[in-house]
Amino acid sequence: MRIVLADLAGKSGFVSKDTVAGGYGSRLRPFSKVTRIYSSLKRRFHDVPSVHLAYLAAIADRAGHEVTYTRGTPVDGDVAIVLSSLVDFKQETAWADVMRARGTRVGFIGLAASKMPELFEPHADFLVDGEPEAAMMQLVAGDTFSGRVASPALPDLDALPFPRWDLLNERRFRLDVPGAGRPAGGGFSVLASRGCPEFCTYCPHRILAGYRTRSVENIADELAYLCESNPRPYVIFRDPLFSEDRERSLAIADAIERRGLDLRFECETRLDRLDPDLLNRLHAAGMRAMSFGVESVSADTLKKVGRRPIPQEQQRLVVNHCRSLGIVTAGFFVLGFPHDTWDSIAATIEYAVDLGSTVAQFKLLTPYPATPLWKQIGPKVYEKNWEEFDGFTPTFHHPSLSGDELRYLLDAAYNRFYLRPSYLANYCRISQAGLRDMIARLDVRVAGIHTRREVAQMARSVTC
Figure 1 (tube, rainbow, N blue to C red):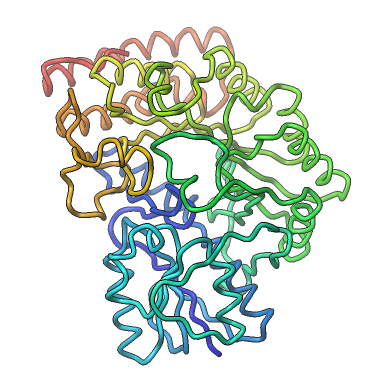
Figure 2 (cartoon, rainbow, N blue to C red):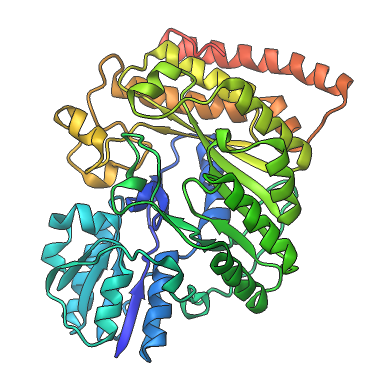
């Protein structure tokens, strides 16, 4: 059987799918000069192939089937498996219609197809509900699917074959960029765990399947496999909470060093799951970048959406220690929580600047289907186009801020963070006291320019 695996490239803005927003995906359509540059850089550094399709490629190849991969060109095959998303479902379903007209049976996998099946059913022969590996094992064994196919989460993740990146044409040129952490051209995604043990009401990472981990040795075996087939690979751990278990994180670092694996890696985690000693060990094993959620500076706001606040002293300790080691840090911030006001969002923007992570990503709160947040504020959602649930578009009636105000504050967040002399100084790791004093004075002048522009446009400033 010839199996086509399709991860369709987005055509409007920068589209991320696979594990982004739990699988619903994200689309950044630039709305300013800053976000045009930001989007362009994300396209060069963050456009990585789907780890879920790489797993399915391995399962199909192990069973003796032919695997073909495409980012959009229709190709002949017996069955096509399409990675679904919310932000790009119209292109995905249109592509499926073309493939079905050619005589290929088409199925959809992913969070969007699992939780929003009505968007895909008219365009598919079958939909996989759940993590796709169990269903794929049935398909390659000879089952013919129709309609919705239950695919229970596998309890033993060690039993899965390693993702086959070679079958996804993953032979791209990578270029190290000083200070960037991740090379241009991306890297290899690794799932050391599935799901998330936290209870944030707005997060889709925890709604498809429960939290499970792989053994340290199995993870190390996959890293060794990557090192054998790729010179000094860059690994992107896609777990939402990589360092949940401190001892397990140390064991992974020990395994990398014990086996002499020449690699670099990045991870996403919570800052209260890190300390200087652990960071030192992870850095020695190859960690070069780290992303983390701050979301809001207000502890009360976070508690109301089920997120455990992290003391600011701990956040600063970790970010500063990463800077001393040369580890690139990316802070994530969410604007527009139900209890947010103009002033509380301004305070979050000010804190993002003051915290001083290498880069920052700001998004608007999005009530994703099937999350607890959706159940709370679903009646306030006015957006009817599901592709607009992209993380950057207002979608519901906020209690105190209009859609225009939320868009403006999002724009101001990117301007305030990236258009300041200290951002470039932090990126270049300038630490000389005299230079830092001069840069601080320049920051004050630039902040004044931002304030005057904001007052001219909105009759008030985003005070930072």
